Image (tube, rainbow, N blue to C red):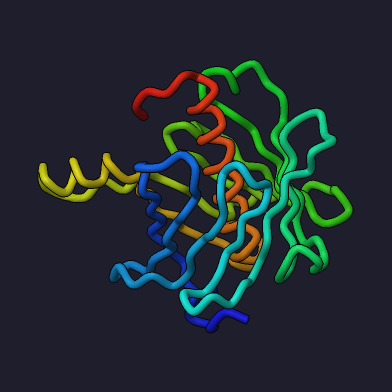
Length: 195
């Protein structure tokens, strides 16, 4: 299990190096820049993990292949662990322009939250089914020209959790990993180009 401080944060800075579309390696940092969690996995393999820096696997994310819309399952621990959350992209016409609606469902498939916004621009809100805002994601561009250029070479954004009682933190972090997978697939299918 992760150290309590790694999962008790209200704000995470998430960074992904965009040098390779074949691997997915995210750093989840606290506000001081200390890495508290990481992801591991290859984009061509339908399995990603969220781990502590020491290698302890907290959750495993798998792609549910036989589904109409992209669907991912988040397992507690390794791939043999129980499914805790299901992430499913909803169909809407705005998805072709970067706007999407993605459901965060419990293990039985019942919606517990929905994420809406500009997923290509990494600016969106997560709202529980009772209408309460759970979290927001926004771009993190540092001050100064050089920091701004560096941030553009890496995908960097901030997750702010406003209601920790609605959805477990690892489920929200797992959702962000799924979002990175979907963004990479969209980027690849659109023939490349910048963000």
